Length: 104
Image 1 (cartoon, rainbow, N blue to C red):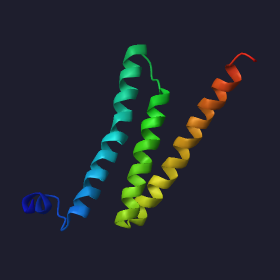
Image 2: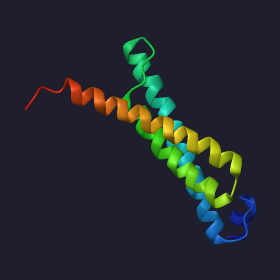
Image 3: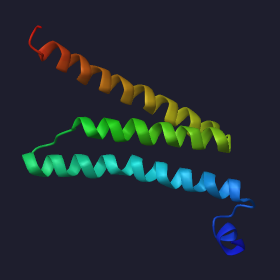
Image 4: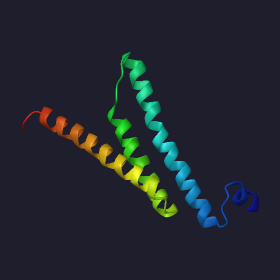
């Protein structure tokens, strides 16, 4: 266990858990590019599918939690702005679907 703590430059198991959260968040955040790439390749044009925004907000919120834990003001500000943008895009998608739905 000491080798793992040393490798990640942390001193406690709690800090190691936060490193795991940060790595998981980064993986979620990175998945959005893979989703976007696959969607664009399938349609042979640039496409941003809804799942891109879900990975963005999930990864962004988790990275924000990690940044708050690490008390990194630059990282906190950057992720906070991103989360607002991702939320807005999801809201626009939701509004478009609602207006396209047939009346009940």
